[in-house]
Image 1 (cartoon, one colour):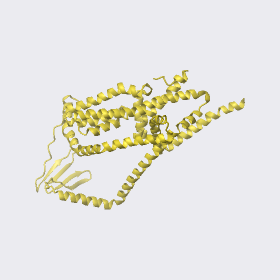
Image 2 (cartoon, one colour; image 1 turned 30 degrees about the vertical axis):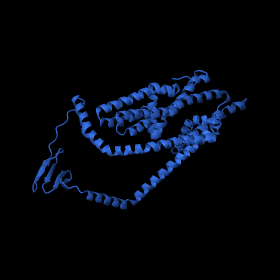
Image 3 (cartoon, one colour; image 1 turned 120 degrees about the horizontal axis):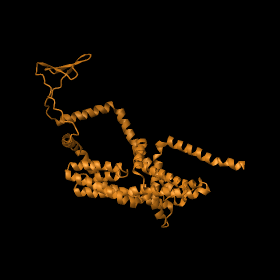
Image 4 (cartoon, one colour; image 1 turned 60 degrees about the vertical axis):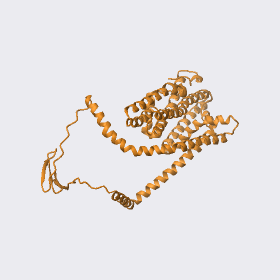
Length: 417
């Protein structure tokens, strides 16, 4: 009896050591973990499509290739058809940004400030200070500065200012009307460019090298991610069987229930969010086009992409659309804001329950915490993967809670908070 009791410690000890080593390796190699994480997400999203093709009698390897061809071909075709218009709108928006910024600064900011002062939110504006008196040619004027020191403006173009260590003499810049000369401006710009290139050739070479290295690394990561996802889809039964073998025979039924719960949550968070992302983009494009919003293809694309991030993405995507609509009138801005709010109300009350289902429900407080923590530690990638990670953590917790309360493992996937 002593030997079996001794062996009881072998399995927990092995799992503890293995888990600690795995966590240490993942933390040490976190800089190269992104392709593996993206491969798991791609494999999880595309596995149902591969299974559909397999049911038609196609080998799995060929099914993976066909799914890749269809999905990548569809994305390439969409990009080819839409990219020119999006690029044109981006160029137009980039050219108009200075005018938009000037209008906001000169029109909207003073108007909002006046309204807030009228409501008593802001103090009254201080009276404009009189411009400093300038010294006529051949004379000088002594002025007392706010800190108690004295500044002397000499009419010949010299400024003498009292400092703690003495007097500072500097040339006074007089505003003179200089005629506009386009040729001189172009020549100066070209000259400064060549001078900068001569003195900073090493920095330019490094910048070009870094750019080429970044492009090469991006292409490599893209293809390695697709290859890893293909391996996961090809061997998904073996992967699941390996993890199932780590569980004692008596607990395998509970393990299967845990996988069912996790799949129910992730299918809503990952697959459902992608579907809602597409619906959000199409609905935004329709509304923006109806009201004639400038750069509506760009704004619709922003709304679609940002909707991948729950809560914060909806708020962030509404800001640029409403800001551009304000330049076309208050009525246009009100329509755009109402349309965006309507889309998200339909999404929250109709699409989320139907597409994501109850298994994907996560409390909004947990969603916000996951987004903030993910962005803080892992930046953009962390924000995108925060909610799926929280879904897995919630599934594990609810499963353990159900087991602790003596619930039937088969029903563990049905209990929700």
